[in-house]
Image (cartoon, rainbow, N blue to C red; front, side, top):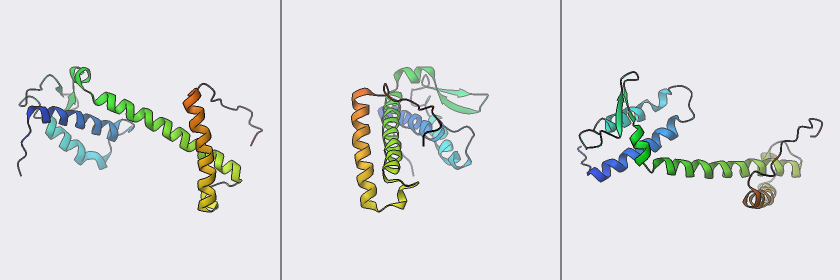
Length: 153
């Protein structure tokens, strides 16, 4: 199979590669074996940057023996905007979800939400989510505090 890309499509592909690489490796502290195939394909695609006229956007790091996006790429790419928006939305969603689960467990007196009927679980989580969504929408993190009194349950 042969795939042809226009210059515009290849430029978009570089953004997609950067986003995918971020998702796969941004929070990984070691080189995961299960991402090797992805990394190999990304490397193969990035190796065509010069041929496609984007040599300023991709460098070859001799020390690591692989292609990497250049400093110029960061200045021209919309990928970072998408990554930042994704991470921001993920943060707020995770924070609200986890606080809501915690509050629902406290409200129902269980150690794990699976201990209660689904309808009761959804009701308790829904009420807690409404509270946290309103709180976050109105105040962000400004009123979130850590209770350092360890004697409280």
